[in-house]
Image 1 (tube, rainbow, N blue to C red):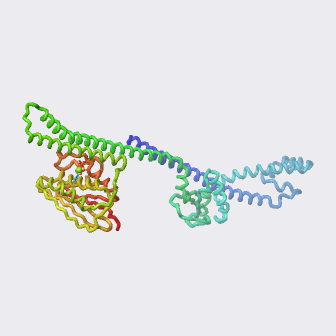
Image 2: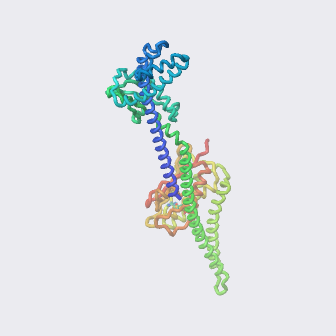
Image 3: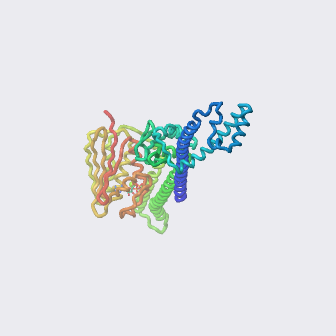
Length: 480
Ligand code: ATP
Ligand code: MG
């Protein structure tokens, strides 16, 4: 799908380029034709002027109605004597209007033939026309406008600048608002090509906004590309979601596996104890009853604790947690948890120090959640300890601004920096380290984070793999 999307995008871009190219060619063609027509018109003008001059010379004094024959072109006058006489005779007696009509017809024919003749002459003969170039270019501006418009170029939207240079390259004519921008794309047209070289000229024209003009011609293709691009982005986003979902489902699988394991151990211990009590072949001393009931009690406690953890989290997800907010002494909460935890730490040969430096330690919060919070962090520190060294746990508090900062540090296995970013996510567990045997739900820190955020606090972790970790919590104090 990705490949076909990219191909589609590629094809569309190519199509866009092709169309642009085609439009450019079309435009070039139009401009060239317009320029050629301008050149042709200028030359024709000159030819006409020449012709008119010639006719005027021929007609000098000839059009007086009384002296009709003086008007006739020379070849007509040199008709055989009798034909000429016949003609004059023919008209001498007829009405004048008829005669004049015939006269103008012959004149028209003459002009036409002469023009044809002149065209041949122009291309082969030297025309000694001393008329300056500037004079010959008088109609250039109008012609250019005319012909460009006729070629289908919208000159209202597309400005053009032109200049004419003579055979030495000197500028002889230039448009009033001439501007050099866009000159690299100029079109040129030779003018008066049939003239002697020193009377010829070259017309240069360029369009400063040509690129924009061409693009505006293919604008209709842009939405197609945009839509494809949009589809591609949505596609990539979908893929991203699918991958995230896949990861999530893997994490949930892990969670279920872990949960089964966590629940199975106490359940099998309890059922074993029940079996023992029910077995008639076993002697049951009061001491044994005591031991078995203690085991059942311990295991049930463990089971309840686990269930509580999962329940707490799902409750949080549903209702955002229920809090019984009251004024709390953080220090007394910490010492309460530490008292019950110290035994556990010393039983594995570790130490637990407290260093409560904060002068202000009253916060507005929920006692049970805050106790759980400290408990979860201490539990992690014990769970992820480094076996090769003695566990050293430390809880410290200080004040910073209007907050109390609680730091819980250990010298355990530490957390990789890429894991550190994610351990507060639900179900996330770091798979590295040599602690594969340690089970958990990946819920502890997610819960901790939720509690902290609900108390308008902030939590971060500072850890180095193999050295240890510090969890830093800041909670806002009650304003006095
Ligand atoms: P649960 O607490 O729900 O029983 P858990 O301990 O695996 O399971 P969290 O408490 O959320 O889940 O911890 C997430 C992960 O963070 C752990 O799997 C562990 O890899 C890492 N971690 C947490 N605390 C520490 C610590 N003190 N030292 C090293 N790694 C830690
Ligand atoms: Mg934990």
